[in-house]
Length: 173
Image 1 (cartoon, rainbow, N blue to C red):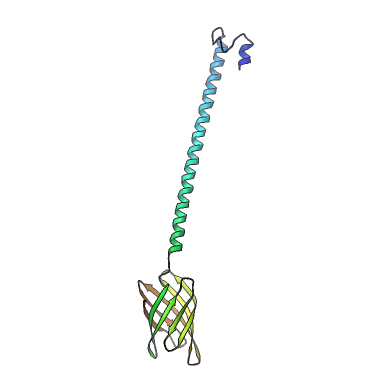
Image 2 (tube, rainbow, N blue to C red; image 1 turned 90 degrees about the horizontal axis):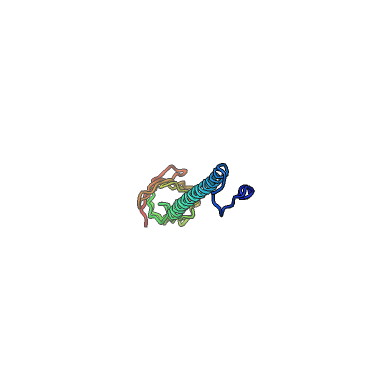
């Protein structure tokens, strides 16, 4: 820019005095373009900063929500987990037992007359619980399939067996 005007005897120290109308307009246009270019660059920088700030807020928000969900899920214990005093209504009469269900999917059932047996296939679905147990009843293997629900500190359901289904009720210890 300077060389164009210096070739015609003009310099920035002299100002616009002595410059032709064409040179004056050209210099003003170039100054205006420089100002406009600087404004556009500043607007683009502001927009980029705004987008960057918005993205940071969005990512931060998503991380907080994800963490809250993970903590909520990890801290939630299935309502069937715990020790239960149950009573089975069998064809031979009421039979008390202690049912223990662990959060890791293991458990046991202790029946006074038959001893303690491991629970297999423990499955949770909301308040519902299902499992199976194999009992040795006087030399015969008896497979019991339990399905039931938990309401507060109460357990209700039934055992299915080769001899038919029989009801189960219980309370949390």
